[in-house]
Image (cartoon, rainbow, N blue to C red; front, side, top):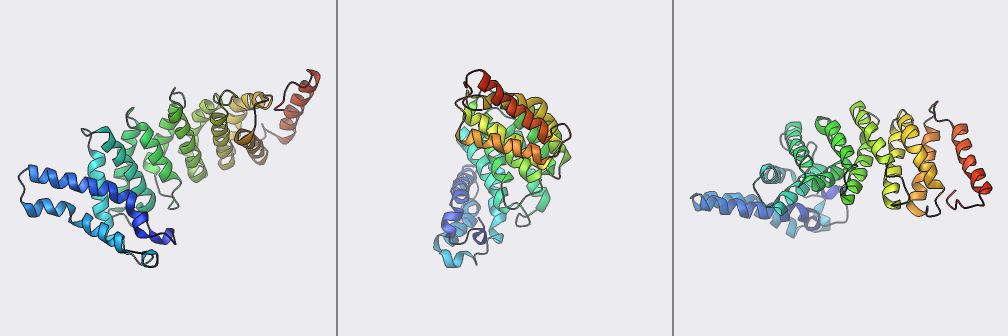
Length: 311
C-alpha cells in the first residue's frame, strides 16, 4: 500500500498482504520454469523482483516509508497477480487468494500507479467480473469489489459497474446468508460512491432495492439493517429511488416498526431511511404523508392495547 496514505505505519506491514500472495506466486512460477526445463537463470528471474520488493519493505521503517518509491515494483506485482487470477485449473485457495489480492491491488494502486493505465485496470476488472459470475468464487469476488468500491482512489470502473450491480442484486435471492450480507454491503458502497453520476448503476439498483425490501423483517435484524442501509444510500444519491423504496420497502419497514424486537443498528437504519426519504423531496413520498403513516401506527398500537413495542 502507499505509505503516504497510511502515515505512521511501516512499509512491511502495509505491503505484507500483497507480498505474501506475490511470493507464493513467484515460487510457483520458478518451480514451473524449472520443471519445464528452463535454465537456472530464467527460473530465478521469476522471483528476483519479488525478493527486491520484500527486502525493500523489510528494511523500511515508519520514517522511511513516506519516501519509499513503490512505482517501479508495481508492474511485477500486477503481472504476478494477473497471471494467477487468469488461471482456472488451480486449487480453490489459490483462486480465492488471487481474487482477494487483485481487489487489494486495484484498491491501492489502481490509478496512475498501475502500468498500462485503464487497459490494465479494466483487464483485472473483467476477470473479477468473471469470478463474480462463478458460484465457487463469487463470495470472494464480492468482497474484492467491496474493497475497490471503498477505495479512496474512487476508481473508474464504468466498464463493469452495471454488470457488477446486476449480479450483486441477484445474490439477494440466494439462500446463502453470508453471500447476501456481502452483496448488501458492496451494493451500499457502490451506491454511495458512484450513484450520483452513473445512470446505469441506478437502473440496476432498482431491482436490487426490490429484493432488499424482502429482507426487511424482524426475523433477522442484522440483515434488515443492511437492507435498510442500502435503501437509504440509494435514496441519498438518487432521489428517484424514493419511488422504488416507497413502493417496495416502505410497507415492510412500517411493519418492522411495530415489532418489539426492533433495536440497535436496525432501528438506526430505519430512522436513516426516513431521513433520506424526507430529504429527497420526492412528490410521491412527502414529509406529511410519512408522518401520517407513522402516527397511524401509534394510534393503532394504542387502540390495540400498546402491543407494538417497536412503534
